[in-house]
Length: 70
Image (cartoon, rainbow, N blue to C red):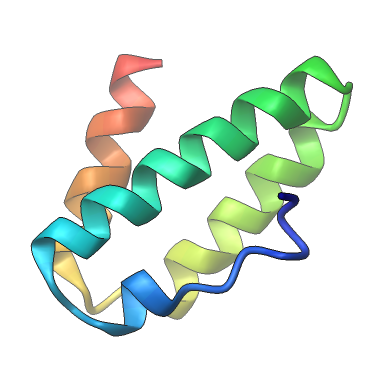
């Protein structure tokens, strides 16, 4: 799967367990992008996703926790 194929259906559901799945997948995609030398593209896509979903505090908190842990 790539960032282009990522469809945020788990984000749209607005359920905490789905947010966990979405963030885990994004972390995996980010790591793969880093390995492929496309880390900047991954960071931009995650940044754009954050902007689109800024009002979903639970999702943003999970993304922030992963960012600190990486």
